[in-house]
Length: 309
Image (cartoon, rainbow, N blue to C red):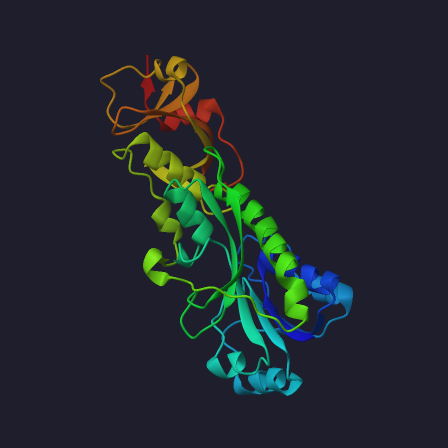
């Protein structure tokens, strides 16, 4: 069986390795060029293609007519999309003799669309996973071919969940690959009415509203924690990013006595934040947005955040 693989990010790199380990012949890899403005914390698909000597095509936007013709001329049995950031044109999907398949980072039909891991953490989900499904001209809507679940623990960040989802994608693909290599396509309905669609997230969506309850604020911090842009608040004329936090236990929360209004306070050398429901968060690491990656010292925090006795 021969395939053309459209791939990016860790899921793209790992699933490409799964195909090669399982005996799929990959004729061409299509990936995105590096974006100098992006934090490239993930594995490069281009490096995997180079390692295995697979022809590589770099595409920033949608494929043009010449690039589409190149894929069509290969007459692949399968097209695979593994975290490729562009929808594939219908004429590309039709070029696959057996099927065009996409790997999505959620348990479809839930969390269709962009940033599924971040949205799942933001909503306090206890489970996520990866789904291999047929590609249609509507995103994440085709029949389900394989699926693997993973747990989301109460203190997991989106990065930690994403790492689990990457492994889930490997498992789902590996388990169904023998059937795909025989030209068999197991499938079950992707019941869209049982799920929902979510759009992309912007850095500005990480603004903290301390009037929300502690669980909501904590889920936001976990959902966008580094290497994502981070949840933030403004104090002392600076934008501060909460890089790491926890729900404060009773003994620690007692340091932030009522009637503190919602917001962050420095209490006995500890940065705590009261939320709208009275819950308290321990802000364990805070960055100045002008110097991301460098934790602020307590002396500097004391200049930016009000203190409580």
